[in-house]
Length: 94
Image (tube, rainbow, N blue to C red; front, top):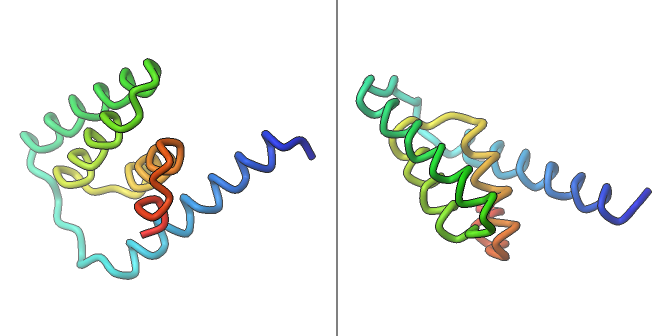
């Protein structure tokens, strides 16, 4: 197995572990308002653009805001991967 594939599997495993821990610790999620969903979508789009530009720290901040506004499992996974890629391994595992 190539080292890149092994690293991707490690990232995926870490993201899933983070998601599981958060889900176990999180209170029951409430439905986001339409305004929060729209704001979350804008932050998500900004995060994706920043990731493409290599600005991982800023991208992670936008993903944190997405999670605050409209919490969902895919966002947690995306945030964990972003944190890990940015070298913030403690945040990626919490």
